Image (tube, rainbow, N blue to C red; front, side, top):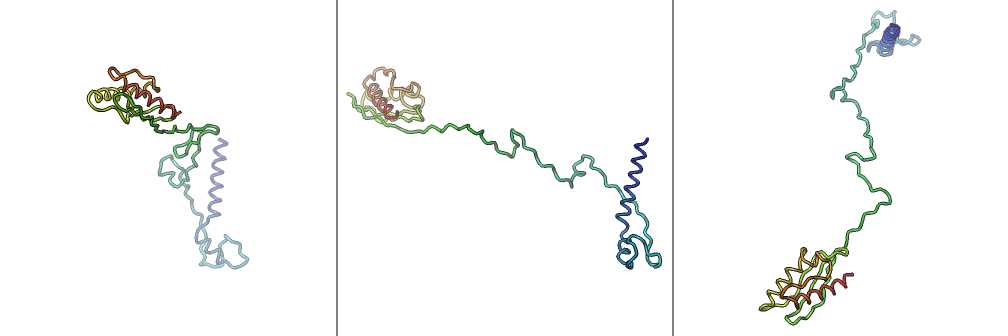
Length: 196
């Protein structure tokens, strides 16, 4: 009960203060026209043309209800940043952490190896320390040599060939193409030696 009385008394005092401080628009005009010596806010009783101020009721401003239109004039609170970062912030790597450099890719060509059926030469592509491709630049040609060379090339060369799988020159000899296989391995080994 005591709280209710205090609330009503506070509301009445606040309303009275608003009325006194705000006043009617015509009161402010009258206050400007009062002769010197007359206190501001008191009507001039001697002049019948001066209206007497009457207290006006003030309308309380409605409080926001949580609807979007009720809070349209409010300034949004600044966004807080979290350690994980917001959508608009970039994460930087922690101090001391380094990113591994990308391996350099280079090609190395082995020497031309002469065999009894013709010359063999191999070029490899190395990324870092890993062989990623092998290509036969020169293989014996003509007659049966074409077939042997095609089998050696199919077995050893390319990104999926034995050279890439084995990562060395230790390759099995291709059946019925011993000389060509041997020439391929020798040129390959020389290219690997240069790459190291």
